[in-house]
Image 1: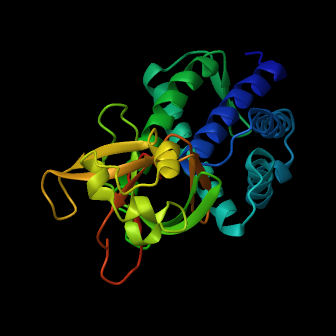
Image 2: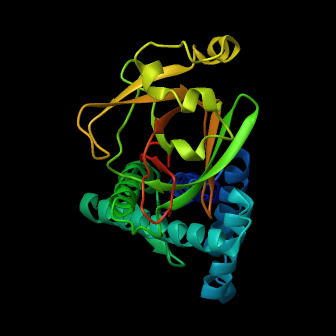
Length: 295
């Protein structure tokens, strides 16, 4: 069976691109399609050289690890060793899952025009199985990652969050609460719950000290200038947790929040600050709560 080198390159280019893209999604890396494409092409050319030659160096495990690291650097440009390690592990995990699904499909379908050369499956049917294998493999990885994320320990789900409002900015110790599905009921905008005492550098004290009155529609104690500036940002957030049934939080729409983790930064612009009048924790480990949607 004749197998053209351009087919080998195209097959592996597509496969590498999907694997790298899935790795970027799971690790929340900043994905630039051009960089991912260049990285995918380098990997595909390596495989093509391995296909047409019989040099042992191209099958060497160390060479392949170096190639993987190079592809990760080109695709995502990780700034920390820990970030690189996480992306590399997810890259291999996605590759193994993807390869396993594709191999299983080849085994089940049993196409006649397929052979193995220098450790590679080649044939006209391989390209057809790549797309289905990629879809199934990516879905498996993303579902597995979400399941594992829901089982994270407290150490894993503590992060920092920057909140920006009216030209001011504060940074808060924040905990991911997977049970926090709180949203503004009309727009469906997600809510970050913040202790009132942590907000004095961001929100005027005239608002923070009269949240109950504002929720009741009483603005008499709020200076006119502050009221005019913030009244369009006020939201009413009903809740039935945090130790109280059928409660109401005063919400203020933030300009932007940034969830900062060791491995990534997640920016969100459409978020509401829910002002909580009590402490969220006795030991002061964190002073804000976010749901999985904002993490």
